[in-house]
Length: 271
Image (cartoon, rainbow, N blue to C red; front, side):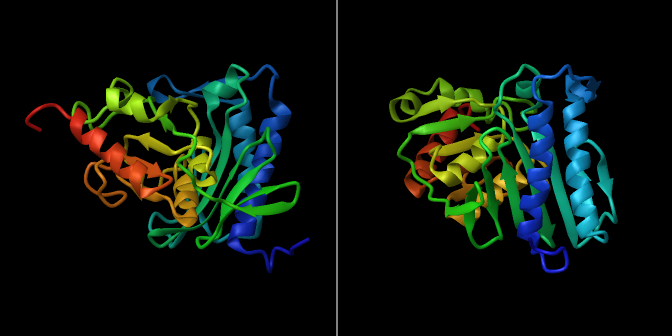
């Protein structure tokens, strides 16, 4: 077992994500208290318990690092050089209705870049992880390199609000585009586990609107896609976290260019 003194940030991210995933798995199917949040959103007791498990691991190993947790908010200095981004249960509504499509996301931002990240699937036992240079999936203690592929033709589209770029861009419009259905098959799983699936070759692409800078939901998946060699930009093909924001993460350049073109063609005339 790796000691905390020699444990790398990537190893720590994996261990923290696994700790959260164990809680999510153990509490699945139980009667869960809900905690209301703004905008009709909510957390369950499993979200809170999983975040505590993740933060306990991180704070024990890296007590001087800042942390942003989806449920507990910010700790540490606002301008901290090292900040962990934690989404303890991505897919809360799925989980609450006993749908197993969820993820536990842990990412470390150092300066302006994500240098380590892990996205754990509590029910498959897989952990998708990166040290910033390589992207791998771990299962049963074994690691395998991630290999993006457009072969499935499956494109996951996030239809959850907010939609900051409407009416210029609404992800739902892609579903009505004839050229989309001729080339791709839409999927809506409502968890950022699907972003990791792009890196793993299980999705051809993922599309969402929104400002994703320092996002506890998306940081891990984006880092995985970048390390795996996917094409990752904002919704108009611009550099990530610039301009209109949003995300198109595609397995290859051809898929990416096709989706950028469809987004452009769906914009209202004259815009």
